[in-house]
Each structure stands twice: as C-alpha cells, then as structure tokens.
Length: 363
Ligand code: PLP
Ligand code: MN
Image (cartoon, rainbow, N blue to C red; front, top):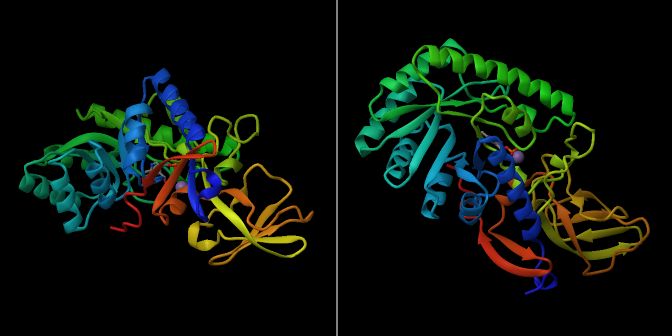
C-alpha cells in the first residue's frame, strides 16, 4: 500500500525519521556510559518498546501503569519500571504477579505502601525493586529530598520481597519550558537535591544503583550531572508540535530529533475560498498543548478544530478536495492513546502496522 491509499484520518510513523531519532539517543547514552530506560507512556506499543531495546540502546522500559506493564511484558519486554506509585491492592497484586515473568520495578513515596508491596511480593514469591520517588520540583508525587527519602529507603531495604534500587527524580515541569536557560536552571536545582539525597543514602549504607529521571526536554542536563544513571525520555522517538517550540542553547528548535509521528488527514471541504476543512478533529488528537502544525507547509495553517473537523486557513486557496496533509500533533502521548494502530511508512510505502498495545488502558 502507498500513503495515498491509507484511509484518513490515520496515525502514521515515518520510519526513517523514527529510526534516526532512536539511533541518535542510543549514540548519546552509549557515548556517556548511561542507561536509557525509554518511556513507553509515549507510544504504548510493544513493537516500539522491543525496537527501543533491540536497536535503541534501551536497557528496559518505563511505563506509567500496571496495565501498560502487563501489555508490554505480554509483548516480550522483560524489564519494566512502573515510574509511578502503585497503591491500589488489586494493582499491587497484579504487579507482583507480573514479576514472576519479568524484572519489575516501581516507585514509592509512602511507608504504608512499602508494607503492602512487601506482602504482595512475598505472596507471589517475587522481588519487587523499589525506587524512592523524590519531588525535585515537579510538585507531583514524591517525598521531600533528604532525610525523608533515607527513612523510606531504609524501610524498603528491610522489607521482605523488596529491594531498594535507588531514586526516581523526574523533573516533569522542566521538560516543556521553552527557554533553554529556564530548563537548565530547573534541572540544576533538581540535580542539587538529588545529589544531596544520594550522598545521604550512601552515608546510611544504602547505595543507589539507579538514579532515574529526565525527559526529552532536559536529558542533556541530567546526563551531564554525573548523578543520574538512567534517562527516561519518551517523546524523543516521535516529537510533537509543542516540543518543536522548545529552544536549544542557540535559541533554535531542538535539532537532534525530527518529527516522525503524523496525523494523515484529507481535505473534505473547501466551500469558502480561503478556508479548507480536513477530517482530523478532536477525536484523533489531543490539543492540550496546542493545535497541530501542518508539516512542511507554511502557506496553510491548522487554526481550529471540533469533534470531527479541522479548519485550515488557506489564504491563497491552494488546497484541493481529497488533498492529503501531514499534521504534527500538538502532544504525542495522549494522541497515540486514542488510536488503535500506527501505520508505519517508509517514504510513501506502508511497511508495518503496529497495534497501540496498551491503548486506552486506564488502570
Ligand atoms: N519519566 C516520567 C516519570 C514521565 O512522567 C515522563 C513523561 O511525562 C517521561 C519520563 C518522559 O518525558 P518525555 O516524553 O518528555 O520525554
Ligand atoms: Mn507528553
């Protein structure tokens, strides 16, 4: 099949750009002796996770939910960090059961949760590796860096069925700060708190094999810190319109990763001379980080959307009915979550269909 035979709207992956992005990150971590634990929340695909492990230098995969971990392990992934708190008894039980089939790690920020995780691990005869999550500025989950983290690490190390594996220190708020200096300063603050906590833990006889964090917006800083050992970038494989607004040191768009994820859409109406309407609306994308950008065109602009329609300003009236456009989604992760398939294309030929394995799983 060729690109023009794909029914629209469709989520497509440009394999050449995708493979280059994956190779760029692989070379980056290998040159620095760091581990990459790529975040699968971006793609929710077992095919992509396996590709990142087999060809992209990833030691394993992060995911955000137990359901995602189950889908990835069923798809052949053998090393999964649930980079989140797992506190619901049913979910804890399922996660412990999963650890009979794969290496499973999770984050912890509560002493009561340590007891629950320990009981489940013991029941299933498995080991769950636990990272103490510290809040290094994101203001989301995580205990305060410093002594509180040491107390929790001690409790984990003493709990049957659990091992203390290190720290989760992800500064999520920093990723999409557009100005380079702002991202750098936010991560510098996170690094200082993390470094101090690692030192306290070591002094308490609790070394950290894993110090994990970083996303596509800031990985260069965590990598240079000498403190972080595992990078958790997710969006780097696809990029999105919002990440294209993130600036590098020279105040240019980040250049190392190219957009590889697109919504293929077709023009369905051009009843007004200066406005076209395409078939990609709200139901095929998330616009929480802004509207999509029309790839490779500056003569037309996606300006509004409703459930099933996208309005495209076409001041020169150049678009034609059935003409196809590639849209760079505003935000890749929640966009992928509402599709069943990636249509993977090389040039204009379809090469593979990858199911969005953990699509929509909300638990
Ligand atoms: N690590 C954690 C814990 C995250 O929540 C996320 C994304 O939100 C990432 C890594 C990946 O970030 P990005 O997609 O910006 O690379
Ligand atoms: Mn995101």
